[in-house]
Image (tube, rainbow over all chains, first blue to last red; front, side):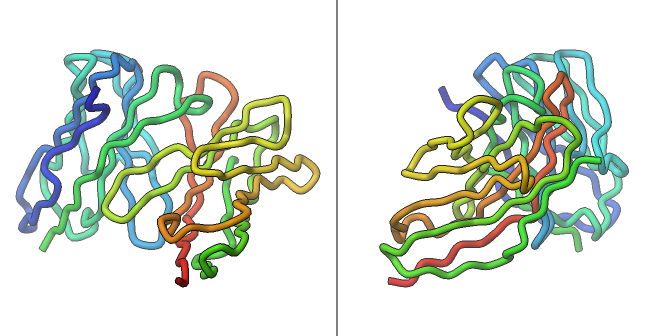
Length: 114
Length: 114
C-alpha cells in the first residue's frame, strides 16, 4: 500500500492564481482530512469528509473548497491564492472518525504564494 | 473547548540521554490522546495513543507516554535518545465520540547532540 499520497510536493503561486492540491489514499478509509501547518504552529483542520459525496468545514475553511467524488480522492482547491495561504498542507485519512482513531498522513505539499 | 499545550518549543538532549516531552490538555471527559512525530520533510507518523486502560502506553521506536488525569498530562518519554529521533513531536487530543476533531499542540522540536 502506498498509504496517503499528495501532489505536488512544492508549488509557487502568484496572488490571485488558483490551484488544486491532490490527495489519494489506497486504504479504503472513509474519513479524509485537509490540514494546514504554519511555522511554529500545530495543524489546523481546513475541511474533512466522512465519505464520498460528504464534506464539511473544519476550523479554517475560508479561501478553500473541497470535493469527494470517490473514496480514494479528496482534492483541495484554492480559488484566489493569497499570501496568507502560504503554508504546508497535509492530507490525512482514517478508518473511523478522527477524534478517536489513528490518522495517516501524506508527506505534505509546501505552498508559497507571492 | 478542547486544547493542547506543549510548553517546550525546542528541547536539546545528548545522544544516549533520557527524554521527556510535556503535553497538557484541556477536555471535559476522558480524552483520546495521541503523540505524532514529524521528521524533516515528512508527514506525521503515529508514535502511540491512549484511549483507556493502562495509563502507561508503549509506542514505536522505544517511546512511551503516561496519562495522568489529575495533572491533565500525557508526557512522552524515551530512556535513551538516538540521533535519528531528532524531529518535531506533536501531542493531540480527540473527542471520544464520533467527532472528527483532532486538536494538535504547537509541537516540540527535538535536537540531539552527538
